[in-house]
Length: 451
Image 1: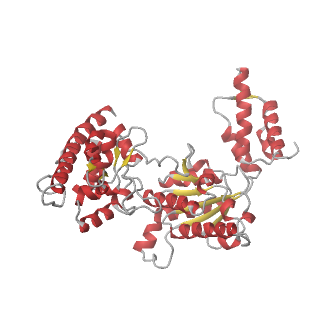
Image 2 (image 1 turned 45 degrees about the horizontal axis):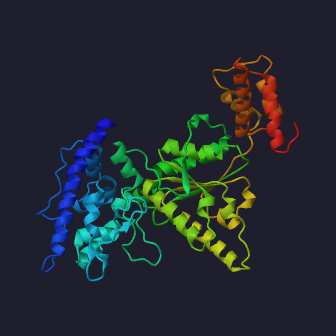
Image 3 (image 1 turned 180 degrees about the horizontal axis):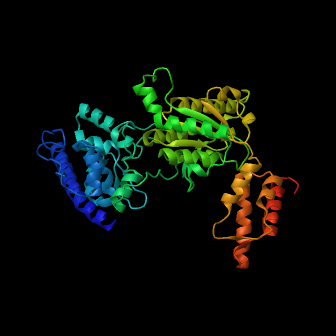
């Protein structure tokens, strides 16, 4: 990691020195008499040659084949983090208006007070006052452009009522991690992002499910592996929608979340669980904005989206008796439309299928039932849940436990956790029958069932 940081520093020294020259050239041309708007970067200010540079940052630029203008925008986004003094010149006061130059863009950082660039700053740097150049710069910063699509720039959309290029120009978390850690690891969402990455240390072979359920999961796996070939190479893209939506339903602890995580692990896709408490807002339009943020990021990064407790959004639609009901139904309609347009896999999870509106279910590609495990499956769950280093008391009868108590896999893990902790507290390392029975009793009481 240290070697990567040292190599990055050398590459970025050259990039930032080039950026400073381009910025000064733009300012000199802009304040010349008469003003000029040369296209930058140009032959008079070529970018550093990184063909032989051995650094994570240079590798990133080569891998994405970034043009000089794109490299310049990245340098601008990184400047506040690496050399904030380079942008101080943009605080220059306009004597005619007694405030900053509107064309320089920028906002003031609330803590450090340094100049934070906006899309307007990038447009000025690349095009000055040339209108055609400014429009091209706006395309370069768009959410669908390569810098955002490759997760190098964070979203730059302006707030409502602001100008087209007023959004802040921010380096993505992935880019900052690569610069500051020297490692191009998995992308991390922005702070406040209403979804969380989920994963598992288990493997596909650890799933304990009925054959029919496994077959349906394998269908989703097949779509993840071959869906693009089916749509594009086999020419079905004009007949089928681009993504795949599945409803997982069944009691808690039966493996819905685990199955979603294992599908992602098997197909090398990150799985993000949507936090509905952060998505749904009481303010009109905010829910749609949050959902759009999630789906835009998922499309760019190839995530599987997992909506836990989907009843909150896909429950029975209410009769429109107030403005609130009308907007609530609009939010659901917006979500359904985004799901249907989403080029990826969406998994919805619910404890009860009956809680989901039938009109929505008809539009899903599959509905996967996760039933309570049968006795043979419960015995396998008990055996695989036991810690390998623990000794078993001779009286611990696992087949009897599996036959007698109808428990889900998650509940069995809770029982094993309780019994294992008891063994560690005693210091003998032995799972006792009494502790397991007590653990089962506690779990049944939690569920309101008799022991």
